[in-house]
Length: 227
Ligand code: 0O2
Image (tube, rainbow, N blue to C red; front, side, top):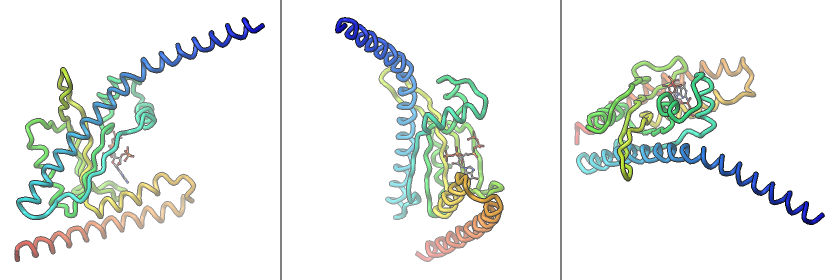
């Protein structure tokens, strides 16, 4: 009796170990790819921090208020592959999902957004893949930001790898607006009629906030001319 129970436990243990090994074998390359994206985020963050530091030394002001970075969750990656009807493979992720690594740069003024984007893109190790200017051409929702899909090299033990990173540059006001609008988009329980009213209100707020950005920038420029 005890011999039988012992054998069963041993078999279950072996099966569990086998499953664990299969999971680990498949998890390893995914974890490795995610680590590469994390390294790419670090590279891009450092580039912006260096630019901020240089500006602070030269002009006694910081164009960057804040940098927020995120790695897309595995769930998010799978949902996007599914939505776009793309194959589930590491190659497919690298080739088709441009925003696994995301760096959001928050500035005080719109002019700084373009200045920082230009500085980044002029660096000889940065390759621009795609640029979407939702500041000059805001989305129907009222969304404003400058999006850059870039490729940045990361230097590993024995190789150099190019990784894609999505950079979103926006002002504090644009970021404030996008955070609130994001809440509305993901709120499933909201009444459709109310959602429609709020959407219209948000479009109006986006225009007000863009004109505030412009006025504040003009004031900043007038102050700087006087100094
Ligand atoms: P999250 O959680 O921020 O990552 P894509 O689907 O990315 O291949 P698409 O749709 O052309 O191509 O990308 P787009 O619109 O250039 O950029 C997508 C990202 O921009 C979104 O990421 C948001 O972060 C932001 N964004 C774009 N439009 C809006 C908008 O109307 N409102 C807000 N609040 N954010 C927006 P994700 O993956 O949707 O979400």
